[in-house]
Amino acid sequence: KRQRLRKPEWIRIDARSNANVSKVKAELREKKLHTVCEQASCPNLAECFSKRTATFMIMGAICTRRCPFCDVAHGKPMALNPEEPLEVANTITKLGLAHAVITSVDRDDLRDGGAAHFSACVRENRRLNPQTRIEILVPDFRGKLDRALEELAQDAPDILNHNLETVPRLYASCRPGASYQGSLELLSRYKQQHPEVATKSGLMVGLGETLEEIVEVMKDLRAHDVSMLTIGQYLQPSRHHLAVERYVTPEEFKQLEQTGYELGFESVAAGPMVRSSYHADRQADGQRVD
Ligand code: SF4
Ligand code: SF4
Image (cartoon, rainbow, N blue to C red):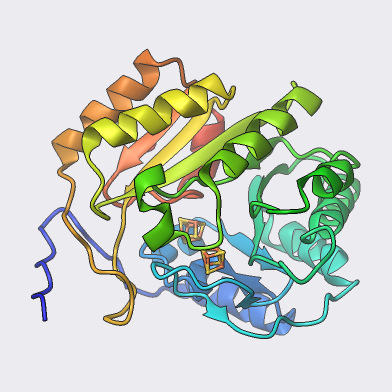
């Protein structure tokens, strides 16, 4: 068995809890809402919660896929809760979020992949939280893209995010059931439909890809009109998940960020601890996140 790589000193996980973290957690429990922050054991949880930022996970905590890097539970999906869009909006009001990220597990069991439910969440938030910037981080809607785009068109967010996660060569091992071209198509077709909405994507690195391959993906994203990018280090959630092949250095992240700007991205967040929704508020303002 291969030995696990030691974490370098630039990987810092702030596990400290504080009053704000407990408050947000209590609020979420009370409403029975799930966040990715908790479900995916995000290393930034304490930091984000203490700044009262959170990423909501809608449509249950059980995914119909089984990506070997992901810590979300999989199995038989839960029934959709029609009250959830309103509950999410109410919680965002209570937490006073300026920027909320709403995402979901994959729902391959639903005819529209859950797109109408996303639209309903945006709608309730527009109604109750007109000041809050809404980012939706959507699954790939594989095999139901036409229907999903139709449903998503009902209520547009401020940012449409869909992560490519890794380079095409590693899709078979990292994203079984997903399609690189299909994900690019989702991003470009959405942008054609909604030129006013910023589109965003993200990559994990350290899974065995080369830096050249990452740059190729960045070019593909630009060719499909994506303007915002996140790149972060993959961290193994447990020893049952894909192993980390390597730790990309802070200098390499800097280089990738610079390349991203040269390629024409309007916002690039690249760094060891960057996650798709990390400092999403500042990314949206075009500020640097590190
Ligand atoms: Fe949650 Fe995203 Fe922050 Fe992680 S980076 S704690 S998922 S808001
Ligand atoms: Fe995790 Fe998304 Fe894969 Fe489901 S589809 S296992 S939530 S990465």
